[in-house]
Image (cartoon, rainbow, N blue to C red):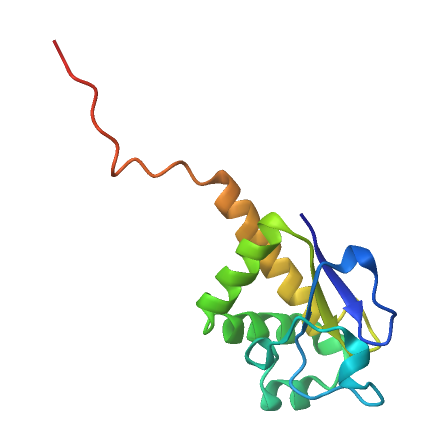
Length: 135
């Protein structure tokens, strides 16, 4: 399945799957009932301090990306849950920023896709396997 990123101002689509708002602040001018939201994941949004420092300045994006990934690692349960969902259905990460390439949604999508690839490469768990009998 797919992890997509989409601005909250774009209309919902049948291909969106589960829709998660990943901004800390509610987007301006958007009514809750119009968003068709599965869940608002404030804990996966950049901290207020990081968001304020970044200010959507693309020249700061690489540092923002590194710092935001560190913040995201504080929420392994939420990341695992989203990765599990993305294995079986489409997931769309909703955000309000204008710059699609330099925002928190692209960083989170990147991290989720890395987790998906890692679990696809992981060998099967053999701890509970019964050993073959030897003659």
